Image (tube, rainbow, N blue to C red):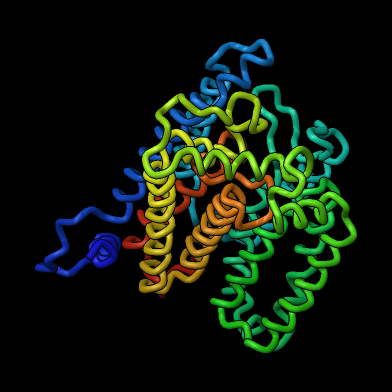
Length: 399
């Protein structure tokens, strides 16, 4: 019943026929905005609760991280508004704009390696004063736009043989080197996974797709085996309680938090694990604190909100597909895949179903770069939804 209701809710489009019984139901745009509002409020509440002990141990104001998260939300909304009202979709799909964005992103990734601020042994951030900007987050959006245009512009090559992969491998190879040098293996996996998923949907032959997947899986396995810290994370994931004071510390504490929360939680603000037991609980393990304080109900609420946002992105992608706007359809689909990947990895990591990895949950985890770029992605989705009915596919070459 609930699945049928959600399906009908998200199938409402702006071009519904007159007399459609679902015509009066909310559009994907309205559902997306409502879900974003709910999850942003929940994020602010949980960051405030989870970060207070951490702030006090560093002689910072109690609501220091809450205030910063609030700033990130407003900054994200500001840039999202700029993209929605001032950036034409036509411009984003022009070849010159594509390579300009790729060039800027590449230079910023190189700047991270030269001028970046080392945090926990990794150089992934540029210090911009107000926030440490993680360029890999920007790379996710830029790569989606580039690949969405590429698979349409080079559709014959993508669907016939290796030419499509070989042409794009230059760009992806440079990106891979720059991300591994930071190192940021998690973001690289998400980006490459999104690229291959778009290629698959665009019609890449099965044999080629699986052959390349096997090659990349082998390279990923090698990257894990020959990097001690990655191998330690994988081994700790296998048995999260065999070394609870060292390699398994975060994961074990996260599982304990979920166990304490049970169905309805111990109460908002009553978490024990955030009292310096679970390091920096307001960041990657915010879902674990949510599980402890709000229980299964709170975690389910967060995941359902993420699911609705993803469903809206997929609905927008499908609507663009119906109007034969393939670039916009692949763009919305790519954004949905990014949200799916990061939500799944973050939730699974918190629950011990995957090795720990520093990937945020979109719109929920603490972090300026992720929040700003995620909201810009949402603005792109809303822009696509707005432009779909206005475009005549036979007269528009850029979409």
